[in-house]
Length: 496
Image (cartoon, rainbow, N blue to C red; front, side):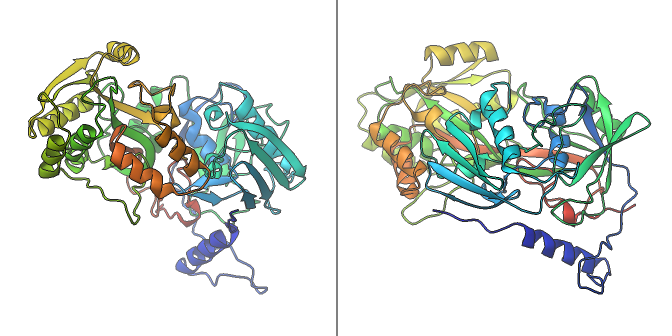
């Protein structure tokens, strides 16, 4: 059973510190916090795709994600080290299968209506019951969502997951408000329409306290998703979230006066293995291939320093007794492991990669060089993306360079379970499946990590970082979370 402290105290302390830094006395005659923050007049614009009601649970347009992050909140927020931080949830208990979430009692929507369990239930059910929701895959194992009272929500899972709260940064909106232009939210900003134009302004009743110096955001209406980048270049849009390494292999860089901020992510780059190959079915061989990798070099060079090396498929990399792994190449260990594998013939590997992505193709070339250094014969098979996908589905590879966006609880079953949607290599191990299930129940997680290092069913390479770009010098103390660019906005300062 786990319990989380309220977030309110931390937010209050942050507000008081900000007030002190701005020269205020921090309170009125009754000791209550006073908003002495120097409000910035600097222009701040966000791209906005206006297409019916902005329902944050159902809107699948990536263009509106930043707008939603300013307007809506979840029960939790996922921190940079992938822990669940309380937001609308005051406290919770859970045994991995059944959870009870107690709501904060000081939260109101922009409309003035008080947040209730019925609102949370409605929002979470919308995510679970609609496959079009961008949050649907987080809720597929939720068997029931009920309001136990006005302030308590109970959720039952069909399969244990002690880390389920990490999946609950799903935005909450007032039940029945998905009409008009914006569903009613609780976030630090609220939408305001003046002379036919929408903007976001400070939500004076926000439970988090005072905002930082940015109190007004202009919404720049877009008709096409690709127009946002052009609007950023012209200065109409001030903040964007863009991948540094795009699917087509182009690097998303913006010239001029911009600040680029990295965020942690669950975007795993890895090497999948065909376990139908007699040689690659040998765990020693897979360990050797892993040990030969210069992961840090791959991140620094081929992945543009926008990735962090990973020997285990979890972010951040765990530090625990009994875990031993290296993120740099160990050629001697790799050669020794290959000898211990006792192969009858020299190892020959065909490495399949999406040739349309120049970064991955270059990474595959570097990986091939590292394997050749230990005596492996390697052919890099660079195929167009559609052909690459077809060959994955057919199992026509020895090893492939893969990438997948894991959920924030780092569920490995799609990759490693028999019949898993990403298990192209046909891996099957009752021992590993049992260890994954035990870890999801909250049992010995380190045992799972040790087993993964021993078996190396897939070979992790790195976690790609998220990228936020904003006009240079616009915001100081900009500390976004993986899924929330507005995390910590109460400490923002801005000139102007």
